[in-house]
Length: 290
Length: 303
Image (cartoon, rainbow over all chains, first blue to last red; front, side, top):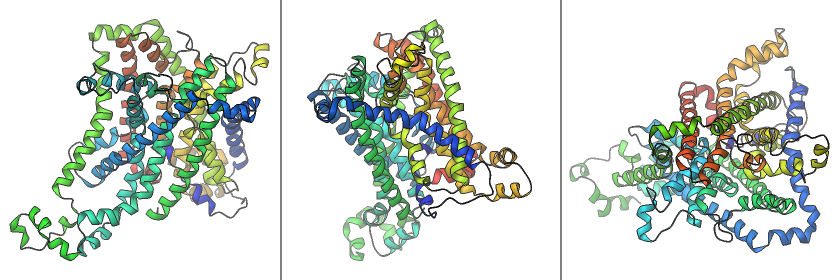
């Protein structure tokens, strides 16, 4: 899906750092609208968020985000998002390889269906996954006798976050795999490399940057995810309560500053992730020569 | 390494007849059958478990008590007002972001100016922010205890827990969709055609409507499609600003939550099935666009 790629930035870096006159009109008007709208809708509200915890003072801010319940929530959100992204990296790689290299019946449908987590509203995903993994659900009833509880435990959080991050790895790795130079593989094979060696030493290093980018995108999305998680999580404080839910709980108690403190912490983490993703994508482009 | 290919472990897998002939050229890039089977099983199994089953579960649960109960849940007044509200919010948010997206793409793709990379990053920002935070920022601005709360109360303007808040949160969430689709497309197409039109005496608007718009229409549609799907399905952000007032500020996803929390599962899944249908229609339309106009969308698909 288009929205999650940060292209264009590298291309514009090559431009000399000065405005150039173009014969195409409308620059002032369109840039004016763009910047005004961006400021009103995105930048000012975000500034309101970042400014809010100031009323707590620095020590108050630290006390707020290191409170055990908040720490547990942050740990759960980040930890499960990381695990979910790992699962997606592994299986996403298999899905991408399958879609690029193998021919099978119904491939176009399978390819299209990968994007479902982007298109399906998160609340729908949430209740559907809960129905599946509840103790009497289609999957849950088989896990129950084995003593595995998924719904209403941290494991349920992992299932939801895996679902939500599923398309990212596939969609970032797939185009790079399609562009792979088959001659390199032929060369490796003719020089006597086994298929496994060719994969490990020729193919994998080329797709690694894209794989890491997909991983980071899936991770970033999962950290802030709310809708699909709250139904299946059970939302027990200290156990299965995610950070975004804690923000909402604090808001309902009119603890605006506390909510803003957690929000700012998560926003900071998003910024760091955005930076990492940006760097990874620049690396991907250099490797893949796109 | 050559010695390894002759080792017994690899020979054992090949049929003895093939051993005397040199390896087929096609075979060199082909995965062994067991690898293929493993990858296919992992990939398809993963997709079946995480995508197909949840989708099927939505419809199965919705129809559990038969078509009658399903239909009843959809024609009930609160469900109707949720559907109408969802359509209203999308009808405001999508065109707003459409106009913004076209303006941003025109400024960024057709002109050179310093700070372009920064502007692109800022446009992307809403994608990397948690939906809950997208709602939170507006509560901090317009809520009763927010920055502008006292001013709004004086003039009796309600934004949070009312429709304007829902629209704002939805606009924030879907902010980058159209711009993100158009910018790389218009960058790839270059300025030649527009420059020719201008040189021949066309006005700026004529150039846009007769030269640029026909070139970008499928990319535009693609962006609008994704923007709309997200606008109608958004949950986290609107959940924060809505206040969950039945029949008034409940969009379809929020209605699903309320019904579910009341243990009215059939009704919850019935409304959810409408949203799932929307997702399926979106995916089908998106795939058709990619199939038919793949070349025109290629610039965006490749990156």
